[in-house]
Image 1 (cartoon, rainbow, N blue to C red):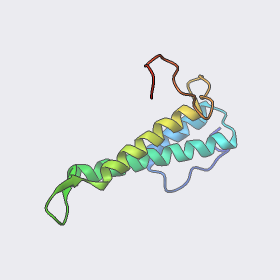
Image 2 (image 1 turned 180 degrees about the vertical axis):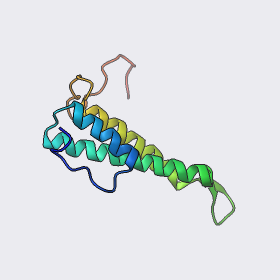
Image 3 (image 1 turned 120 degrees about the vertical axis):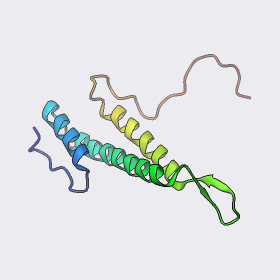
Image 4 (image 1 turned 45 degrees about the vertical axis):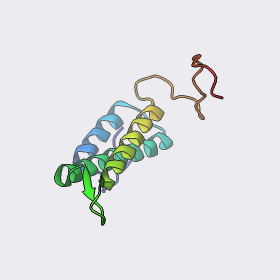
Length: 113
């Protein structure tokens, strides 16, 4: 049902194609569509940062001459994390999204004192 929702213009052409495929295959509620938009934005942001890193490299030199991580490294990481969390929350693979907030793992790793 790709005509039910309007894909924002700022989404990249490749990502719009991906979104159209999802909209054709799934009957999303309006809040799911908004999650899909934000997930798509995260993907595009990650790709933008990746292109910048490919051009500039992973490090920059600060005013003291010390190499530091390029700011786009964090942008790419955060956007990638947001993308995968968005996919998990939309739960397109038929598995229910995890309850929020996520509970701590119960494996016995010893005391945290």
